[in-house]
Image (cartoon, rainbow, N blue to C red; front, side):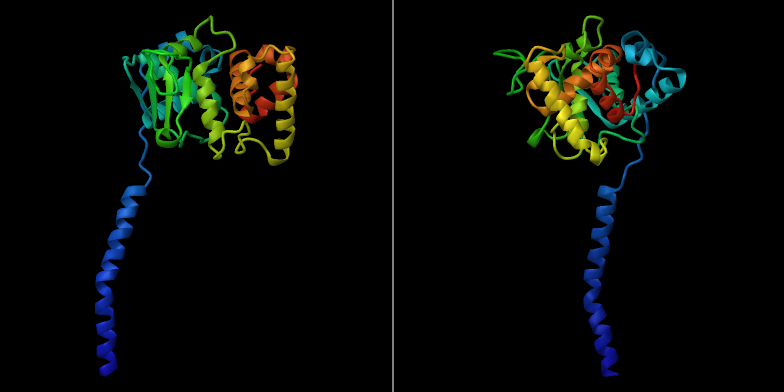
Amino acid sequence: MGSSFLFRTYYMNLYPYLILLIFFALALYFIFRKKKLVPVVLSAEDKKLLLNHVEFYTELDNEKKLLFQEKLSRFLASVKIEGIGTEISPLDRILVGASAVIPILGFQDWEYRNLGTVLLYPDTFNKDFQFAEGDRNIMGMVGDGYMNGQMILSQSALRHGFSKSAGLENTGIHEFVHLIDKSDGATDGVPQYFIKHDYTIPWAKMMHKEIQKIEDNKSDINPYAITNEAEFFAVTSEYFFENPERMKDKHPALYDSLSKIFGQQLA
């Protein structure tokens, strides 16, 4: 009888701790449970904006157009787009979403889990995020440190990237490629989730070979690509998505590599 009493006393003493443990487990569940994402329904006007302003989308077949719309709907439902010193138009939302979807159209079930907000500034800005005074030459930036999970884009640069006069440049695509690069933990020009391990070294060698050609003025790739490997990857990705036929003609090996990385044969 004494042992039975001790047994009951032992578990009665544990009871408050068990209640706390259950409460803590339930709290963690409600905090970290995956919320069901409700995709934004694209309106007829949204689809019209896509057709009129996103050439990449217009050249897709009907099946790929539907896939593009699906990915765009999910992106717009999961990422906030806010204006700083400017109003966000329906076209701006579509262009930000298109910039995000174009590089990942060939990725199955992949989303930007390292992004929560896209901030649009009216024009270029500086490293202190000022856009109204001083020297301003930054068109886009992926946030780090206290800005982690955010992207800043120049509204004017975003719109220009989808204009007929943009050439091989597209600021929106450039910054989202940086996010893809960063998804493995390092923004180093090697998106390890999308490059087979045994292809990493050949890709790195190709980057340095192409960088040398740019330095020797023997390439039509934007010289900004020689800044570092991360910028090379982002700049050449712009080229790949903006004019794949030209890249395949002038840089066949690079085109082939990027086709494999992004899972898209565009030429």
